[in-house]
Length: 90
Length: 226
View 1 (tube, rainbow over the protein chains, first blue to last red):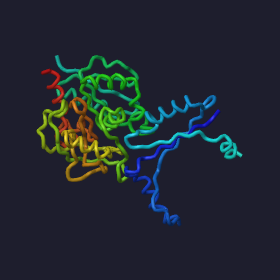
View 2: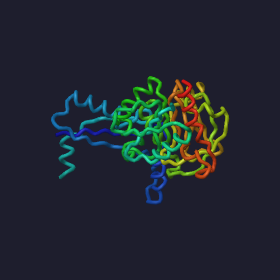
View 3: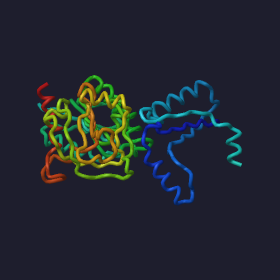
View 4: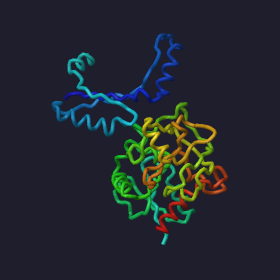
C-alpha cells in the first residue's frame, strides 16, 4: 500500500473569494501578518501494490482529466513517504 | 411531425419537468432521457437542465460530464446535434469542453436568486434565432456557481467571433468576466447560459413575462424547417 497525494489549486490569476474570506477573518482571531490565503483541494489516493512509473502516469492522467479542471486549476502529484505516514499515525 | 427534444435527468436535476413543459408549450415533443442510458432515443436536440448533478461534488458538473449519456451527447454535439445547457447544464458543457472556459463559485459567496436582465448578443444560434440581436430580456437566475471565467485569449476570441450569446445588464450577479451570462460554440449548435429560460415561458409565473420561450421556439423552427 502506498499513498499518492494530488494537490489541486486555482491558478494564480483566478480570483479565490473563499481564500479571501479566510484571510479577512485572520486578524479577528489574532493572526496578523498573513497577506494572502488561497484555498485548494487535496486528494489522498491509496494505491494497491507498488507505485511505479506506470501507476504514476495513470494518476497524472486522472488528475488532469478529472480531479483538476486545467482551465482554472493547477495540480501536483507526489508519492507520500511511508516513513512520514508511520510518523503521523504514532 | 414535430421535433423531439430530449431532457436529461441526472441525480439531483431540479428543472427537468419545467424544461419538458417549456418544450411542450413551444409546440415540440419533450423526451425524457436518463443519465445512465447511452441511448438518446433518436431525439433531434438535447437540453441539459438546471439543478445539481451527482451532488456537484468535486466541481459543478464534473462527475456528470463522465456519465454514460454524456458520452453520446459529446460525440453527437461535435457532429452538430443542437444542445442547450441551462445553469448546471452550462457547467456540464464547460466541464465536457464542448464550451470553453469554466464556472466557479459566485464572487460574493452567496446563493443568488433574482430576476435578471440580459442582452441577447447573438441571435444566430440554433437556440436564439427567435430573438433580435441586442434585445433585452428578463429571465430568472438562481445559482451558487455562476462565475464564468476563461483566460484572456479565450475571452478575446469569444468576443471577436460574436460567441458571447448573452450578457448580464445593469448588475453582474456573480463576478462573471466580461458580464458573460451565456456563450455558444463556433458552430452555434451548442449554447450554455446560467439564467433559466424555462422558468419564463408563461405569464402566470416567474417574471410574468415569457422572455424565455424563444429558446424553445427557435430550436423547434430550426428543426422543422431543416
